[in-house]
Length: 93
Ligand SMILES: [Zn+2]
Ligand SMILES: [Zn+2]
Image (cartoon, rainbow, N blue to C red):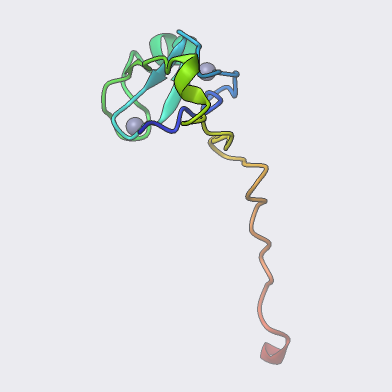
């Protein structure tokens, strides 16, 4: 089952489950139509596969099979703050 990711991984545009502007590759890397067509020429920048229109899940199914709320964005992710580099242990001194 598709995650139905909520945003474009490139420009962070919102892509709700009923959006006809969502494009996905076979790994469900998700992009908006603008990025997929204009920036990537319909090839996924992550895996090189083709980007195609994401099927729309009928509203009646979204209750049982809700869309993902986990935003995926290249370079930054609110749920995964950048890893802090602790530096060399003090015992090295
Ligand atoms: Zn985009
Ligand atoms: Zn991909």
